[in-house]
Structure formats: C-alpha cells, structure tokens
Length: 275
Image (cartoon, rainbow, N blue to C red; front, side):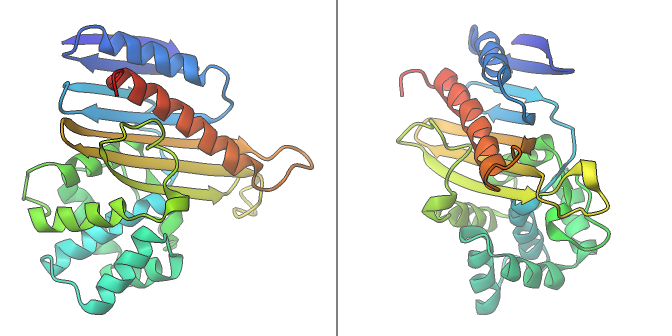
C-alpha cells in the first residue's frame, strides 16, 4: 500500500492506494487544483476497485444543506423495515430527485430526531450532529461521514439497510433532475452509473446574528459511481464561496460549484485516465 501525505493550507491531503503511484498522483492533483481556489474545502474519496482512499480535512463539520436528505431517507427506511406508504414514496422521490424542502420536512417530522440519530449511530456516521432547533439544512456533517454513507449504500452489508433498501436510495439518486447533476459527477467515466446528491445554502459564519444572510455560500456534492469495473464514492464540501461586492447573488454558488467540479475532474481523471 502506497501512502502519500502533503501539508496544504493548514490541513493535510492524505491518499493511499494499492495501485502504483496513484496515491502520489491524486495528492498532487488535489493540491494543484485547490491552490488557486479561495473556498474552504473538505474531501473524502474511496475506491474499492483500486483500494484507494483520499482525505482532506475530512472531519471538519459543515452546514449540510440538502446532502442530509439521503440520510433522512435511510432513517425512514430503517424504522419502516423497508416498507413505505405511497405518500412516503412520493415525498421521498420529491426530496431526493427534486430536492424539495417541503417534502423533506414532512419526512423529517415523520422520522424524528431520535430515529435519525439512531440511524447515524448504526451507520457509523459518528461525527454528524442534528441541529437542535430542527433545521434540516443546518445538520452538521463531515465529508468522512458522507463517504461512509455512500460506502454503506453501495456495499453488501445488510446490517443497517438491506439490499432492496440500499437500491431504492441509489435509484432515486440516479434519477436526480438534470439541473442538479453538477459537482462530483464532473469528469466521471461516461459508462459509469452515477448516483448524486448536492446541497447549497447561503449562510455566513461572520454574521451569526443573522444566520440566513446572503454573504457566504455553502456548496456540497456527493456521488457514488458504480457499474462495470467502478465502485467508488466522492464527497466534496465547500464554504467561504463569497459573493463579490456588488456581484450577482449567485456568484458564490457558481464559485463553489466550480471548485467542486475542478476537484472532481482531477480525481476522476487520475482514477481512470483511459476513460
């Protein structure tokens, strides 16, 4: 196993791989990609095929925005033993495929914080914290925990969710509407099955008296890539995606998305240079 670590912007990019030089190449590619970006970034990657992993500030907590939604669905399936009513299936599809917040809160209230926490414990997502005030998008998540969820969904362990339940969540993530399929899939092999969930939220840590201010975009993406010879997952979380003075309010969102896609493209390119 080759392991490479590189100090970078107060953190440490760490990659390990059974494939010769891949850890070294990924570490350099991530550092090179982020060198010119102002976003604060966390990364977690696993690839079962090449036994490769990379992390960068993977235990830093971020406001979740909508990437908490597959967790909510996992918790719902867990308490229902895989059986959802027609209404719950309708709401689940709206929550994942369309990222509809109203549907999400209806399911959030159905599951309840105690059951969500139980699911987190069972899934090994030990550094995720539910917002005490009940704001779904302010759940505190880490790149490592989100990658743990992707690995659970694409794995073969039936302890937390069985095969049918895992396939149900992945199927909805495969169906995410076209204009929300940015981020982690950028540069992925064209013949891979892509399961994705993204999140975006404007909230600035510099002005906590008004936590919903328009200054700082949190932009996140998580994707699982399967089929053929593919079996890997990537999570990229970002914040400090600032709106320039007098700039369009969406400028920070665009900046965060560009940061994620630059990282994702570099990682996919190094994992699968011939695809």
